[in-house]
Image 1 (cartoon, rainbow, N blue to C red):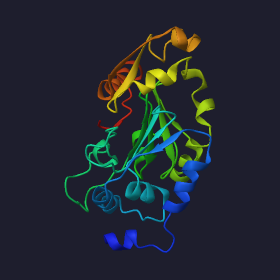
Image 2 (spheres, one colour; image 1 turned 60 degrees about the horizontal axis):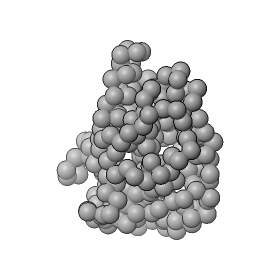
Image 3 (cartoon, helix red, strand yellow; image 1 turned 90 degrees about the vertical axis):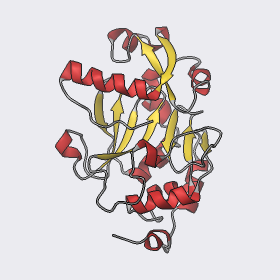
Length: 242
């Protein structure tokens, strides 16, 4: 186990580079104010250094709102911050105090999108629960297929990809005219429930013809998990706590 000073006091901290990366792409990115103490506690529990994008984001960033909040990347937000995006620690149910025996063996949930999609960083035991990709690879739980998909990149490359404008293509079949206005109206603990559901033939044919309403993100994730169990008999596992 490494002490906090070993994780923070590194020769090449990644935050200056990450901050530049976040502002260099065409995507709209809002960097939320951070809680330094929460960041340090979270970094210690994760046992990653500030020389990584993950460590830098946790230590210096309260979270990211990408594409007007379509995507919420978790960090260490100030308590009572305006947007109220939950912390990485809360979403992943970190222990209240540092516990060297605790870990995220299957994966670390790093972001949610407005439709209930989940981005997670694979842990060492991910293959044991049927997740694709190798350890340290970012995977995506797709609400339109109810399956995990390997993205073929690690966390640093994934963050750079998010702000590169690639989300327009990634979500091309899941966005409709006026989606930004609907997303902006959501609170930090809400997502959009779509009827007919995203995995249905009707929604696949014309996403703009669906009916959408704001619901708690917890409800959205729960419905997706239950649907997986019902249709495939497969539990996708932990999708984050909001």
